[in-house]
Amino acid sequence: MTTSYQIGSTYSFNTYAPDLLGTNYQNVVVAGIMDAGSVQQLGFDVVGNNQQVYPSLPPGTPSDPTKYTYLRLKMQSGVYQAIAIPWIDDSSVQLIQAQNLQVLIGNIDPAQWQDRVRLALVQMGLNDLQFTVV
Image 1: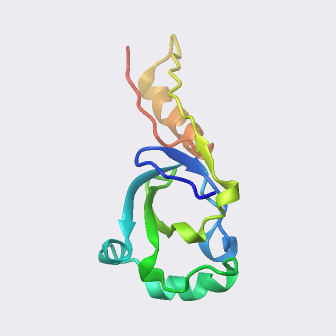
Image 2: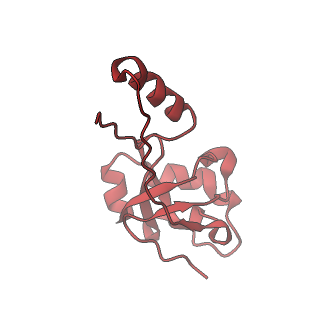
């Protein structure tokens, strides 16, 4: 079964070539679904990257990367990255039902604590933060 990716949805997955592509595909947001030409315009080396990844792909995977569909992903760090759908291990894909968590820390001096709280949360991998002093 092939996952039907939706723009704006959050996913976690593994790739067929984690040594080449990394393993940080946790809670990534699909920012766009693109063809090879569009991804190349963003500076992504479609052919070169596929030459490296292709030996790790399952037998029967088409070899022409210009025929692949690509995902433009917003990583947890806020950086955007592109990945070809055939490089994703479809059996590992999880749709993440993300929600917001609102926390109120009472009786503190925001000037003293806001940067420290932000740093602690970022170190835990939480980057989509919004602070409001009430």
